[in-house]
Image (cartoon, rainbow, N blue to C red; front, side):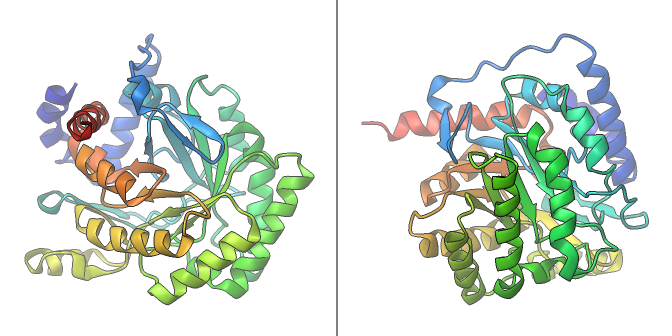
Length: 346
């Protein structure tokens, strides 16, 4: 699988990034029509978080499989969990194309997809046929046309449809591509949002289902500290850090002009690693073990994942590295994790 991807990647990268993405999904859908092998994961990879047992600490981050289309395929690769979405309550096309750009020389992607979504009803219907043995999270967002002050209504509509079909829910208040969305991270907006979602969770009898919050990497440390206190006092289950960044300084000077010409959007990939880790370390310091944290942003190797877990993260997620390295990356990360753990044992 890794060698095959290395062979076809130059052809894929000749295509517009979104066309290549669509072709990849078409190929994955064909593969799912065949019997797919169950992954053979070492028992020592098991991780516990949020009251759930994960077959591996490595998961697929939200943004790649927005509509839960390839869950059997992701399971066969060996992911411990898959976070689908972001799912909006009502269908919306997202931002105009082009809206997805690759920077192969730096292992980074710029996207301004804008929550393109089939809508919660369609995705919920597809989830009814989800494969067993795979932990699935649902990442929820608001529609672009919905004002921030009415965001709770949107999250609630999507939650009612998606929550009964998944193992955990993540609230996305940190995408840079929906106007005003990041304002929901401010404590004054965040408190009523979390309170309302927890009340809905209780009303639906889903108190045991984890409710997580996904944060941006572009917040000041003082803002992160305030968010931690709101999150802990609210009673939610944990945090995911981080989403994509608006910070163009993570791009080399050589490519800065090219990226600026692409226009607005969030950057992900290798260049985000240091910034995302700094944010996670600050969050972990402020959390003091009161809530678990999922590491996301700039991770692309077993060493990266091992470092995130050693820092104190409960789980880790990848996305951009998978685009550049291919499906074999999941197995390589697991092998590297096992090797690193065996070396650390006396």
